Length: 60
Image (cartoon, rainbow, N blue to C red):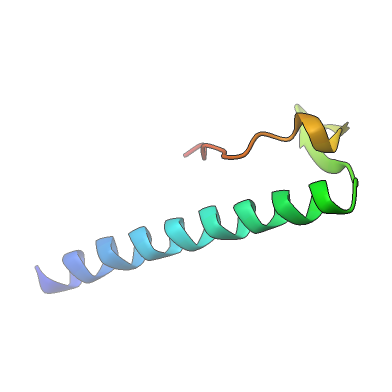
C-alpha cells in the first residue's frame, strides 16, 4: 500500500509542477507580447497574449 501512496504523492507533485510551469509561461508570453501556439482538434491556433487564461485544466 505504501507504493500506491507514494505514486499518488508523486502524481500530485507533478501536477503542481505543471501548473507552476504554465503560470510562468503565461507571465513570459504576456511580458513579451507573444502569442501562445496550441493545437485544438488537430488545428494550429494562436492565442493572443491578452486572451491566454491565467490557469488551465488538464484532460485525462
